[in-house]
Length: 640
Image 1 (cartoon, rainbow, N blue to C red):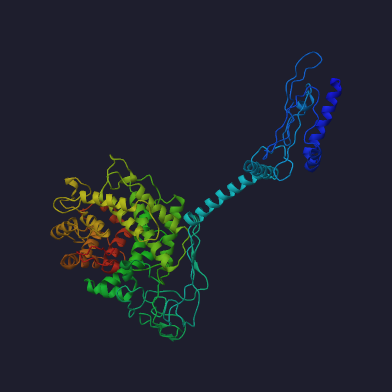
Image 2 (cartoon, rainbow, N blue to C red; image 1 turned 90 degrees about the vertical axis):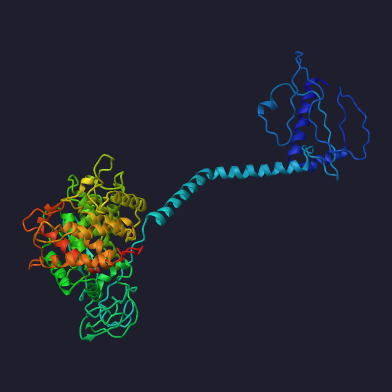
């Protein structure tokens, strides 16, 4: 047969076999059942087959048995015929010389079924191939529907969700709940369960740089310090200031029994026995000042007289009458003067809800808050002057106490928290390397520091520690600060301006009270430094208002430190200072300049010419009887 005919016949045969394999395996089985093996073509070599009782499955063999030589005598390469499922370029199937002879054999697989072209692949491997094929189809579908982009979008949203959750739970603070104020009179318990009068009172302010005002909506009654007869006991978890233990209400007569008698004009009903929480979260050492009965009792127990209370009220009324229109006090050093005036208010428990001093108190707070907002937490009119470190610390001290009272009283002062936090944190972060503080808050080792500047920073941080605000580095800061303070104690027991032996003024260490009080404030009242300081004071301090021995600044500290000592130490010191302060108050409530025209033994005495300054210092000295609890000198826990 001519080669061309053979090629044509072979090509047809191959094509038939492909179609059968691809489309109809059953037809292939029928074809092979008629003839197990084709008739050999010319040139094939027949080989007898032996019968095998267990023949192995065979696969379709479409490979030429010998090479093809074209008309030019060139041998064509042997090209395997693709099996079912192979993917080959069309050019491979159609180009080049055709294979000459093809051996085709199909053997039945066990069980009578025709073997597939891939019958030589084990069943296990064939299953794996099938799984791979399914995975490929799924992947292809995934790619067609944009699976990669979808996955990327899911990841981005997941990251945003995690960041948002962190922001909500870690950074955003839960807003403080605002509750209504209810007028006193009648009813016990925290809210006075049987009140008939339930008027609302809200203290609202709008602090801005231009306008500062305080107003109340729908308020027909105000809080007042409990009248004599209210007795809250030994700092109980706080007597029913919001219940029957308050004075007054509206209308007819009324009384209620919280922990206090609660007599006053009010239409309140009932004899409630609950305990209120008006000052419940205020540190126990501060709460005693908030009951007039307690105040007068402690005044008497600690060696004060009714005249002391009268002098304090006169001083506070003078401060109220001499407040500036912007809420500040003083013509110069206004942040410091405003801070001292507020501390004098708070020392008598006069807060933004006080009947007589509430408006004045709030305006002072707002002034400092506005100042802090303008200066990123720095409480000074001019931070380029040396003394602004005093202004900032005193104002921070006052704002921290304001925060404590306002939080408990549910008085919302916008930005108070933010400014208090920034101001306190600034003090911590600008401590000098030696543990103290100096002018301009210089931090390098060569800049001078002193006990006077450091004392105000330590007092301010103690007030900050009473708040619910978390200050970073507070503990380590105070540890270094007290170490610095105690290093400034002279071998005699007195504390000077610095560690130098020549830091005494007129032979007297005028800051001995500062060193003692700083230790006492931070639970170190039983240290030997405090005992030595107390001994030094009793032997060396003097107070004569109209002579050179009238250092009001030194006695502001000494009065607090000796009150904390208690016992015989306090008794002796109280006899020295009390009447000197009482007897030199002017009729208008302010205090006259000390010294009697002489140079005063002390430092910073030039500031005594400022009426607000000396009036605040004297008022705070007379509040010492009840402002803080006494530690009695030996207790490890301080009452400040």
